[in-house]
Image 1: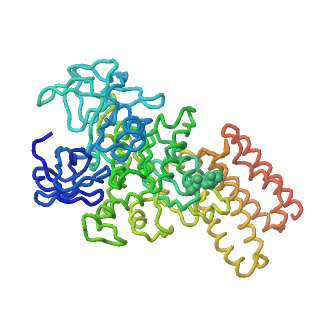
Image 2: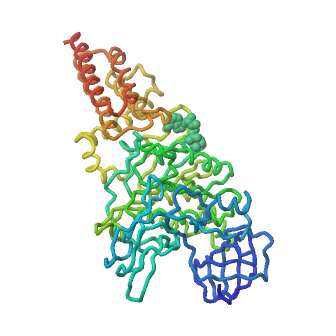
Image 3: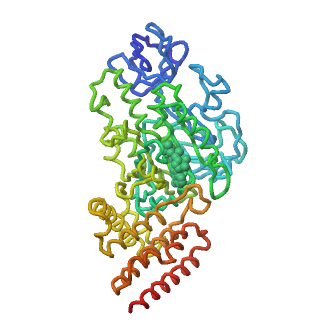
Length: 592
Ligand code: ADP
């Protein structure tokens, strides 16, 4: 620690202003007062620094010292991240509790990664190899589900002089490099400043879908690997269920969840529920491939501001290993409110609704860290592809989507899943509106989708959406003038749209089979409903009665197709098609 110390001249909640800070830079970490509270410089004017403090500042006052560290706010990256629950500045919550009881004592320093735990390191390169930034030098089986790849830190390059298999703590050297500037010891831990994106070799187009097994998402509003999405979550709309489904079922290797709760119990729910989730493929706890970041209500707002950066930096680090990472931030509105509070205390010129003028820039910068990339380094000589997908939930006051945070978010994200409490009241789950949601990835992932399903899948999805939109128009007419005025053709549209809603869009997260639907099965289910439509429309044209069509026994079987196990659906759906044709033929037979 340096001899130079600053002096506090003002304290305003989480904000401390100190003088005598020449030599420090923006975003440097400082220690405030003899209690050594963790803070970060967020404004510098001459030798005066405004510092946001990540711990309770009660009892701290003018005249007390501030110790610069000349280091930016950083996270520790290495084995031990998975299965851990951190606070917004990467302090492990369970350790904090052990060390300080449930209420966190101020100024305690706990390492983000255990210094005692040993990990079995297996080298993936040899003496004499030349390795560069981001290259994988070895692996640690961090959990039964994830091999943690040990990466050369960005900026380091050299020839491997020593490397050995063995059990090491994160701070033990596992390899020695000869570099242009001398010997460099590599450990399994590295640090990275949270506010700076980690470098990549090149960015790739987001043309691979991140499949979720949730039919309304994959079929109608897909998200791409490396894509961005926004989801509002009115109370009781099923936001938590969607988040859990996404964490468990999306085809990501690593799950990161950052919770910025306002009310204490919201966060407690996350802390209690997340560890209970299972990884569906292995049956192991999902935590074995998850990092949780939680801001509980007794933590200062500044930690909430930092938490999304902590989370996204950890996400980028796993992306750099060639993994697909899915990050969920809940709720980014709370994060923006933290920004607003700090900005207010800095007496900055307020923008819309009191949010700082840089709100939109900060939100955009956050989502821009998502992406599908060719990683900086190589794995056994080969390039790696990684992705970081970001889903932010928003919780505007009164559900008002004109709120500045929502608007700024919608300007950058490419997917909007419009969760609506109205649908939840009608027990339509997932309560995602098919009329108001959108995905700008539909065309980008089209080729990959077609390859995984059947050639007419995208056309089917378009037709189905058109029917659902037509249903909304017809319902308006029915409301005004009643159902009797509708033509038989329109009544058929209503019938098919109902089938699309009830038999396809409804998806019960708690049903063993319905909880997940492969894309192949989604396509096959959609094909059945649209075939029903095509055949019944022909039958109508040939003179069949709409009342009879509505009563066809095959309708019941279509309603149950979502419950057919994955391994049986192909033959079951073939049988369904045969039944459908036979029933229609019989209908037609009556009228031909
Ligand atoms: P929120 O987090 O928005 O307050 P929850 O996610 O806890 O709401 O959902 C509220 C309730 O809605 C759940 O307990 C469940 O009964 C029901 N629900 C939500 N989504 C689904 C779903 N996909 N399938 C079945 N039930 C659901």
